[in-house]
Length: 279
Image 1 (tube, rainbow, N blue to C red):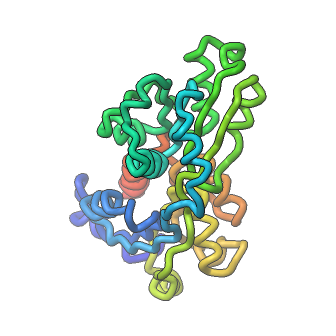
Image 2: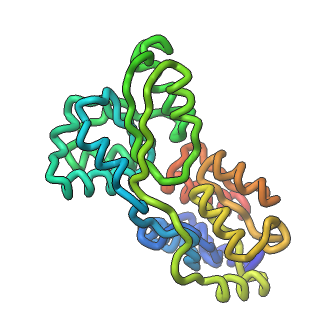
């Protein structure tokens, strides 16, 4: 693997990433804990944020949904970002999180659930699989089967561009689904392309991490390519989940590190385990 291999003394059990250089592509505002934990494990971290989280182009659809919360049976949050932007807008409109008490709430991912609980919002369902397919299965089980979804009304505040599996699956079961843009993911105003390109050219990068499909796509755009295999030759690719890994495959990347649980802490552990096993 790229970079200078650390000595046995440096690779202590508590610092399995000593001597390793890891590039992170997560949004800068969300990467602090991830970077800190990788550094605690001994890694040299090079942030190369490929996305930035910003407000939607218009709040019109979300405002309309908020004004008609009484018309929904379920509220589904697919990410911490969705929670943050939805609750912020709720407050800006003079509404209270207590108004969500009458709705069933599904949170995809433990971090999403924690953020809701911190805001005093109850959570009814946390899927075992932290992705759309898992959310559909969990909700279906909660209501007693597919027939129980018929005529239910769902509100999903999420990224302006996202996968359509969940709303389509719910609609096919007879539910009505309103998907409203709560935020956007856009390329950042500034990039670390020059620094990362120099490190890659010098063989100084051991691992690159992708925490969403957007981070993969925007990284490829940053380097103006549809084939990342040559650019990242010799670099271990770590993806947070199978959807992200599938996107990486579209750019001819093989995922070397894939956690069993699709969370950033699990990804961190998987990276540490990968290098621990390599000795």
